[in-house]
Length: 222
Image (cartoon, rainbow, N blue to C red; front, side, top):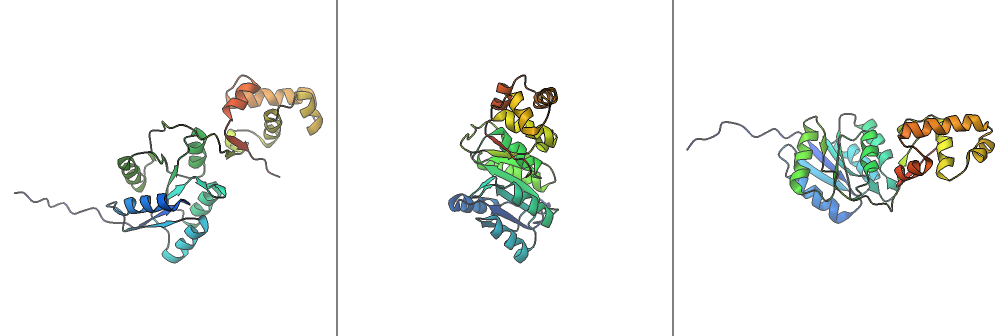
């Protein structure tokens, strides 16, 4: 019987699982711990615990982060994580299939996104891809959770701050005349901004804009 001379792949470090649902966190942590490229996996329930783990253990090689945490979207934590551990590979997860969740996660530095309903082999393959320097995605064929709103900014939509102000009032149903009065602009200027906003969003009307941004929350700088 032939014996393979190939040595097993070297284990590179630990994985950090950040999920505020204890049962989910334990399950994912136990599963990912068996990955051949990982020495260990640690599960925590809050971003604060995750950052403390970085202090105690050093940066992980990969972090699996739930997009929705108890305090809202984890986009702020993703920024902090990348700032403290620039080389960490990040795989975001969610039970919410809203397409903007994936887009927001990727826009904040994630290297992959998985829906929590994906089978274990998809998680394993995505983990390998991300650890190898690539990206990992699930099928994306899951129903959105419309009960939550994904935070978006004018910049993330390709809009200027002024166009963001216009869009916020459009989403509230304000007519051009009222928007002009609120922002101390001429109606002509508001009309030009509205046209630009619709073009940027690739929609033809305010109704389509509202429909496209359903499930999101526009955040303007104070």
